[in-house]
Every structure is written in C-alpha cells, then in structure tokens.
Length: 181
Image 1 (cartoon, rainbow, N blue to C red):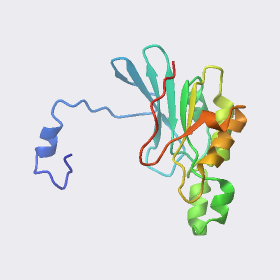
Image 2: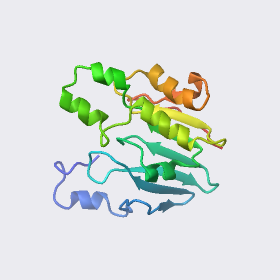
Image 3: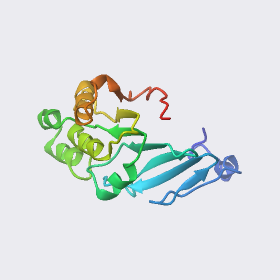
C-alpha cells in the first residue's frame, strides 16, 4: 500500500489514477454493477459517522451497524427489511459498569454517542426483525466488557431463536460468508 508519508509528491495521485472516488452522504446511494451501497447517518462520537446498507440487483439487503451510541428513527428505517444484519454488540451494561475503565470512559462508551450495548442492539433487532431475515451477526464486541454468549443470548432472545442461530464476528478474522437469498 502507498501511505502519504511514504509517497513522493504526486506519487499518491498517480497510484489512484483511474480509481473512482465517491463521497458518501446520508441517503445518496453509491452504485456499482449489481450492487448498491446506501450510507446512513448514526449517532456516534466521530465526525460525520456513517453506516451502510448493501443491496443487490435482486433486492436482497445487508445492513451494517457497528458504531452507534443509540437507536434513532432514521437508523431503524434504514435497517427495516434487511435480509442480513451485522449489529454492534459492543458491551454488556453490567460488565461495563463493573469494569476498570475510568468513569469518563464508561460514560463515553455507554452514552448516546458511544457504542451499542447488547440490550440496545437487541432492541433494534426486535424492531426491524421480519420473516425474511436470514442471518444476524453480532459484531464489534469489547474484549473486556462483553462475552460472545451474552451478545448471542440478547439477540436470540428477542427473535425467539437459538443462540446457535446468532453468529459472532471475530475481531481479527471477521465472519464466515453467508447466503441471504
């Protein structure tokens, strides 16, 4: 890869010659042959935070939500009708409260611009779940303030599923491929 600090003047631009650059904005789809990306804004303590819903030519939708502090009507609307969901389950509220994090970090992580708790993710899932939802993946789990089994239970419980039906993304390996057709 070519990093700015390693590049000679003009070299980075040359490396990007012919590459299409798209600026992502809420509600403005980015189209590729057979694939559409729909960015949507989320509440998070970052500059212009966006998440995305992917759609294919057959109308299958994969919603991704990995950095948000709370649910909003806009976020819920974007995730409605998805056939697959990758949902942030950053922390278990009890584990976060008991953690060694300083109070300021606990407040940031658990705040409305921080990260989703298992319970908040489950509430979002309960709101957007429908008969066509094929796969749910818990993601962005805190190594210190969550456990995969807690996230799986929270999500499975609200959709009357088995915890085995909820996958957990590994922070290093990601997740397996899933067919949402």
